[in-house]
Length: 126
Image 1: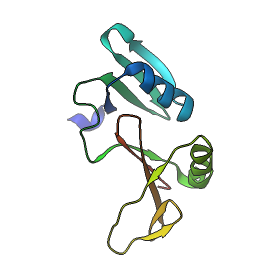
Image 2: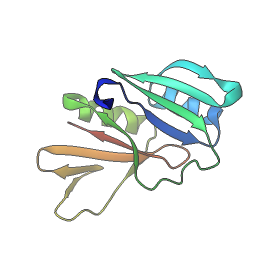
Image 3: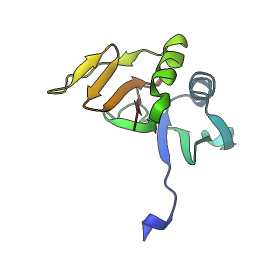
């Protein structure tokens, strides 16, 4: 039933203005429909979309909120984000090798970072 419909990531933030700066200027997402008075901003990312909205519960999720599949552009995107000041998280997973800020799972290269509210964002070469 739901397999026929598009899904979107939904990210809670404390301050929409601060979040917009991060999502638009640092991540380079394209804003679409939004309602600043209601504290909501939509973005496009490839064929997907992300909704960022203000919530008192922002940043309380301790798991990945959004995943971006980079394919062969993974290393290029990592360099660009590093140049913009993004700091990457390091997690201790059994059997995973680190290559700088990148977690290496066999052929998969994966990195995580947080937005200003502590939401965890994932990048991968998948």
